[in-house]
Length: 158
Image (cartoon, rainbow, N blue to C red; front, side):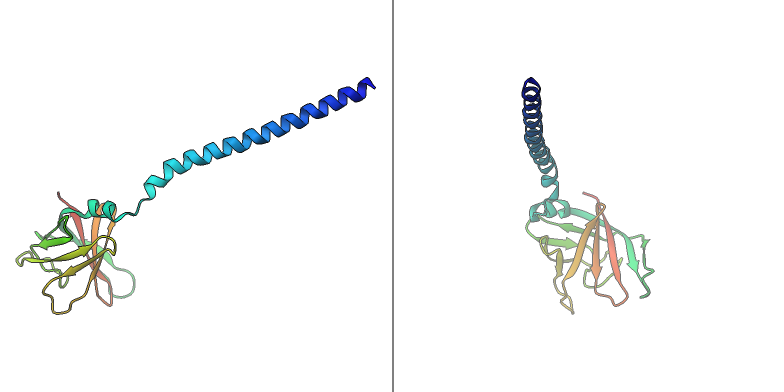
């Protein structure tokens, strides 16, 4: 009889130990998950304001991208004084045209941009097309409409 009571007490002890361990494990999982979520979620922001902050300012043309149509295109360095300034009101101004790809910096141009749609709409172009842009590794890349692929890469200067 004593043996049975001891075994019953051991069984009860083990059941309680395992039950408490599972409950504590669930609590730890919840705490760990909450901590990970708190750390990760703020870095996943895609708000338009965040993109605007990155885009707003002055940019200088540093490279042109061209591709013959076989996918072997690369960015090549250029000597140019072409600059673009993106303003907080959704407008931009440039000392070169954005109607077509060019390194020239002798023509003032302007237009509007949308950070949420990631588009640039130049004013006074014969073909009124929205250009797309992206910011990669702190470089602004403006993509033009070309069958073979072409674009301009800018570095932020202000």
